[in-house]
Figure 1 (cartoon, helix red, strand yellow):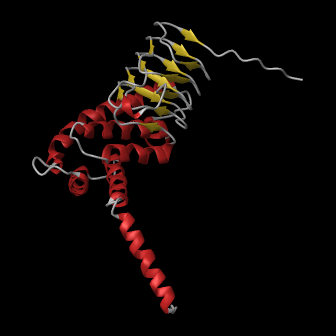
Figure 2 (cartoon, helix red, strand yellow; figure 1 turned 60 degrees about the horizontal axis):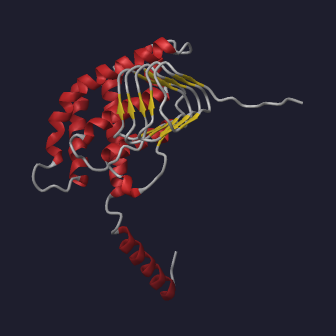
Figure 3 (spheres, rainbow, N blue to C red; figure 1 turned 45 degrees about the vertical axis):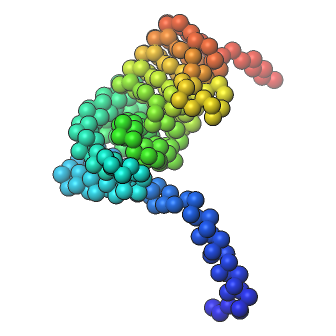
Length: 266
């Protein structure tokens, strides 16, 4: 294919403009792809029995350090050297995730086995990637924790910010449409169904670092499409929140909250 002089000049201008704009983007897409690879390798290392753990840990170390080289800006104490600390924490995370899986098995009548949960439950996958990304926040590794949970979001429809604090065990059923905000606190033995939002009452950049999302105490069940908003909102332990409920105020322990609709059939 041949180009005229004008076409070549126009083509050159387009390329130069793209390159100039890309200076703002840096290596973002490369970071995203490498994070997705690291996430999948990490999940396989923990949950695929056919995988050689020693071999995959070596692969993970290389992927982790490669990511760190792309995102770390500290000249001293670079985050690529934090791999050993992260690796030391993986056995405890795996133990917690096995408790999550067992909790799902005990509460979902459709679950036939732990193997099915590990392989086919999007809620479990989303929880797993959340727990693994949450650990990385302690090492101040920019972008990577958020990109890990976003990778899980794309696969499962569940959006969990890695900054949320979630107890053990935890159960998300069906998963699609669940949103858990950055400053949410969820205690142990909580069950959440599809479409649940734990969000902020308002979105304002000045609220950065402020608790904006609700606290869910232990042994609470939140049914489909319920929305709970606000950093001061606390759902008391042993409470049940019915489907489609909208809550912006705290409720005491042992509460039962339901949405009453009017349905007319003609």
